[in-house]
Length: 88
Image 1 (spheres, one colour):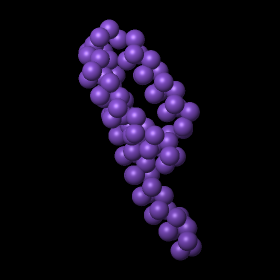
Image 2 (cartoon, rainbow, N blue to C red):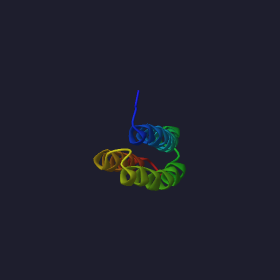
Image 3 (tube, rainbow, N blue to C red):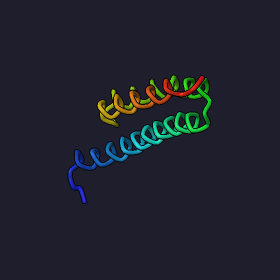
């Protein structure tokens, strides 16, 4: 167990950051699931709308350092390609 005040403070900070980061990752996954379900449903307009909402959420996660920026770029690229390939 931590003895120094600075170490105890670090533990408190880490706990709070972990909660915030988990929340962000969960939110990102939720938005990705919405896009995936819209694509699976075959509704191009709905999929494009869900993609438009998911994109800033993913970018925010990358900027905050919760997820890697290359992962975000890869996901967005693949989703965009799948939406574009959908029949109108």
